[in-house]
Amino acid sequence: HSITAKFESTATALSLSPKTIQCTAPTTPLITIAASDAVASEAGTNPGQFTLTRSGSTTSSLTVSLNRAGTATNATDYTSIATSQTFAIGQSTKSVLVSPVDDTAIEAPETVVLTVAAGVGYTVGSPSSATVTITSNDFSACVPNANKLCLVGGRFEATLTAVNQPPPPA
Image (cartoon, rainbow, N blue to C red):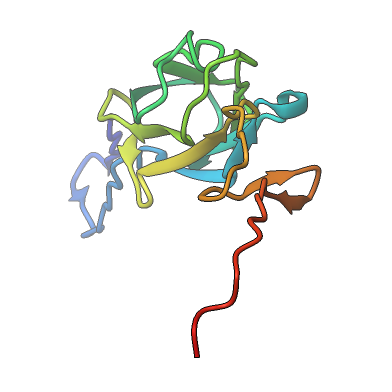
């Protein structure tokens, strides 16, 4: 920052008048994250989505660092998500897709957690972390028996065996 002052004088006098100069430090953009589609599914490869939001100046591009966590494995359970995302000039939101890999593993729902990490040129806002849950479309085969009901095609099925026994004594 620079300040320029102008002084005027005549041959006999120098005139200075008091002035208040206020300098405002430039503000850094504030970055937040949200799960704009918090559920992804292997079935039909339905993606989830995070949305990064930049508040403040958008006059230059900005690269934001992310930390990945959760129970799902990057590049195994979902296509790889980079740990840095770049906002273009003029861009105030950035979408990050969670595209599940349709595997054959029988697994419980898994999570993808993205957290905005501290970096240069921005401030981490709140919320700084969000979660997308990936549901599996693979289930174990269920064989109904006298002790187990199975959901098959939207209805429960069981295998029951009838035994003809005489009535109990009175």
